[in-house]
Image (cartoon, rainbow, N blue to C red; front, side, top):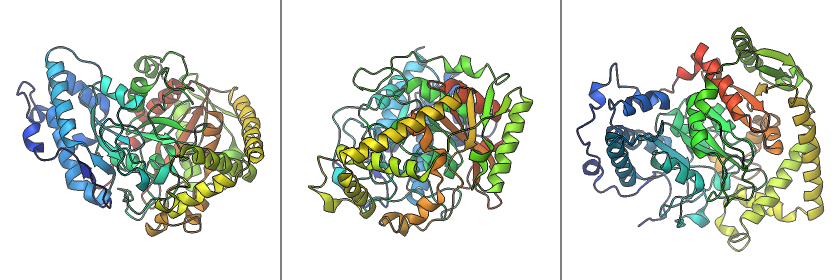
Length: 505
């Protein structure tokens, strides 16, 4: 049913009768009845569309068709989707509509169109991970996060493109997602398709994964919100691994409140995942209502400004001043330095664990891997057990010191990985030398600490550069403090309008 192809266009499954399969019951008032303009409803928040769906003013069937049409119209140039699940999305929307009309409303994701990074297993639908060796792999079950989205009533539009194996470069069999703000700018890695689709209004939320910053980098590049949860807070069962001890799955949205909604739906214990945490998940809506009065935000002047563009430093400073006016307390703290040795430790850990994750295909099918990721796996195979142990000890020592400093505050403010930048598309298909410019520009000292320590982090827009691309602030929190981070993001969005900017597509 599915054919391996050059990913210049997304795969469309079940497309023969898209128009005919998405017929409304006629018992919703429909898009035309929604007060105000519906021209930009694709940029509305989940909270907004959920309220309309629950009130029967907006049909899930019509809304899903609107987004499928938007994907068909725009994604040939944006390349965010690897697979569009048009027929199954229409069926899920019709089911949601029937359930809601029967009085069985499940909550704020019911009938809302979303998408997931193509690392997440979807039963009977390709899960390729940006890898040619998995181009024909169709899992026999849904990942836990996909199952939980379905249980919440969400409509799954499809699977989103990413870098090969969720590292830094792309395989030539797959298209590189295009930053909707400017086609010349880096779209973020590795959850680039998730960032592009969410920013461009091709879904209301997406799932990404973060091993060294891959929820937060595409969020900053595309001007959206990215929430990396606590390690083990969201199950990775049925999610293709990059590095088992570093991988996190989390939501990417256009609002902090939307990230909270998706997080609450996908978080929680999963007996099938060995690192899954048993802690109950809070009611995020109740937490958001608490605001930020009395919340203590740490800020390390050296860490947050050293080698950081002054324009970004100023935007973050203004964001903190805005939060102070809402009652937050900003306190200077001292963090341990993130050294080149720690950066090398991350690469060693990640590369060696990637070798373990790919042992079924590498080195047996090494020639089917792209130049960059093949080089990473070769590097990982050369990392000795002693080197891995030493790198892990460095990680643990740093994480202990970092979390000890963070224990004195409720959250830590910093850049989320710098700013986006121009990057030739051809380079992103290349080897380590071709991608050196990428690693010279991204600032992993702001992303890796949360992955090393397994603590949550949220990134969100806080300004706009002279060139017109989004500027982003990050808040890192204590273990299991996702609710606090979403509270901060939501409170900031309540008094600013950066989240209201959308790309010109």
